[in-house]
Image (cartoon, rainbow, N blue to C red):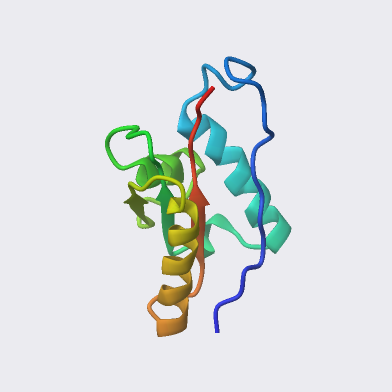
Length: 115
């Protein structure tokens, strides 16, 4: 059975504020590091990264974030392009991978900046 073992998010700032010039990689990498620390998980234990991004950051946002966070190159990145519920969809897909035995440790969530 899948378990959620850590949850984090960036601070909420006003539009045009402190995050206005940060890329999604710069926003998400410290959040991933904090989640892994909270859960006592090393970078090498992560098998998959699933992230939602609604504003079309280009390329594969999940893969770009995974590499920026220092995850090994073998860790795949799956991006979901969906408005509103994409972060929840990423978490539900991660749960399905764990429940099916396809993966043990999956990072999942959403990444966006509207600053």
